[in-house]
Amino acid sequence: MKRATETYTDHMRSASLKFIIMLFIILVFFILNVSLGSVYIPISDIINIFLGSETGDSPWRTIVLDTRLPQAITAILAGSALGVAGLMMQTLFRNPLAGPSVLGVTSGASLGVALLMLLAGFGGGKFVVFNQVSGNFSVIIAAFLGALGVLLLIGILAGRVKSNTVILIIGIMIAYAVTAIVGVLQFYSLKEDLQAFVIWGLGSFANVSWNQMKYFLPVVTGGLLFSAILIKPLNILLLGENYAQNLGIHIKRTRILIIVITGVLAATVTAYCGPIAFLGLAIPHLSRNFFQTSDHMINLPGVILAGSLLALVCSLIARLPGMEGALPINAITSLIGAPIVVWIVIKRSKFKAEV
Image (cartoon, rainbow, N blue to C red; front, side, top):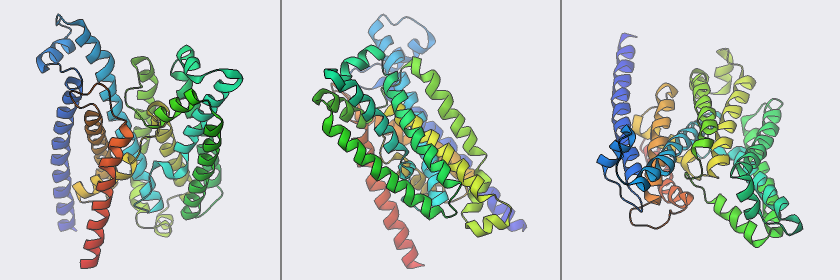
């Protein structure tokens, strides 16, 4: 017993050291995200801007404070939220390929935006013009309502179905059905509206302004804090539902809590940033591989840090210095996330074969 306690203590010390290293790397990439882009801004000038000193170049101040800073913060929040959502989904369904999108929440958000664009296009109107008048909040509200509609349906079914596998299948089928409806709406949309929908679907961390951040930040932060109360149930679920039930875990209640928290995190990120691919799937694998543990006491903060770091890296690559515009964030996350998942799956399969 004493030996096991010492081993756990050593493991926590090692994890704490890794946390510190990751925080330092995140800080480095945060600074790089603020300084690098189509316009290079020296670090000294960035420090002066943050300190409130005059730099003599007002456009730099606008670029840093109104564009790059909220974009970097959005990347951190989105990466953290998707990482935690992916971790909880993979634990609940005990499936390494599960992610925030398996419940159909992301597809529901896409349906909400597609409905908005089609309705704005009726009578010869154009969504692009409508959005300029109403502001980006119209897209956010539509995406959020669509995602919450699917989440409500999944939540009701989760309270009536005993098997997690059945819920997983239902979520996937709902996603397929919603995607089909979106396809029909796209077919009847105007060309300008369809282009706007495609651009939204590519994802971006640059859509959240300071005015929208006051809603985005507390919802994501609240979801991350609520996920912390599930650390113990998530660890017990790794041992199987029967074992968890014998230990006094209320399976249905825990399942609904996990689905609701995951759904809110995924819905919020999708509403504000568009459907971000692969982050929720790849980040939990990165965390488990880096910390060499399945303990959620370590993995939960681990995926928050790993998600923040990977999102900042993707955001920086999308805005490589010298480029006039930004690449679609989904193109970067897929190019980075897909090889990561393939590498980890192959690595695990080789390990199991050797054992």
